[in-house]
Image (cartoon, rainbow, N blue to C red):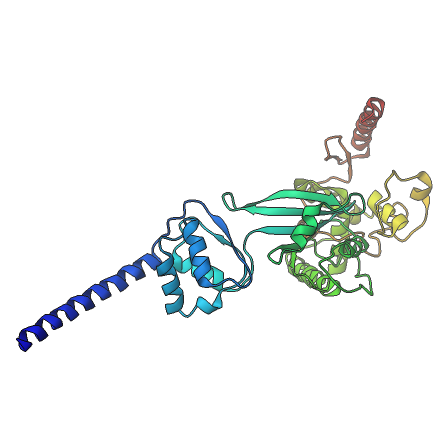
Length: 386
């Protein structure tokens, strides 16, 4: 009898072990398998949350098939205590393993709200955006111009959200003074700027920041990036160019940046100035004259006066030979590249053509015809009130 009972118990134990092993294998397969989520979601993990609550949240949102397996897996992999607070993008079909990795890895939010401070040539704008998990694109929910409009309530609401991310975007062609003034409006930053960075030495780009970051440290990051770009682009320069140093390249690139906002024109504009330098012609470019008037501090806001075109300044390229002594703005990477790899043309003139672009010419006669057309367009616009 005892022998039979022992045999039966042994059989049950073996069967139980097989069942347990099968259950573990099934659980492992569920843990690594593609999840049931049909559309990406933004999972918000509040401060003080635990893995039990998050697993239920994920199950309720249809992101996982079993909260129990999710919790057990988190415990088994020693990640249950590594849960981070934040907003996390959970992609369509994400496995439990991928989700656990996402919410325990770094704590950096990957979705939710972003506040962007856009420093432009004429204004600084603040935009509040939300990431749409379905399209993986940010959707603007509010915006306002610093100094011109009051901040909407939602801006302050999102500023107080610990999951909100912050970004400073610097437009191509802004001056160093404009960047510093724009950073003063970034209330997520701290610290005073004691010294204005050299003109041209701040890289236009988008920079992710954190509340409490120092303004001077961010400016140094911009300078480091611009210095790296200058060194990189200078190594790719064409042979025989009439610019001899990276500093001259930077000056020329800043002029190209201010002369055209059309990407495909940069090479042509660069060719005009390169050809003029080769021929010993004065550059005669209005943006340099404007810089001599404003010193980069603000926007002129009107056309140049004849007296200003005749006024002697180090930047008046109607009077000086060659390049001005400093850049007149912070050029982007594309303008730096155009300065050392201009299009091969015989153009030495260009003028606005009324479409936002320019008409280029090889001879003064052709240029005068283009100027006459532009004057007609200006007169028509003035007469129609445009």
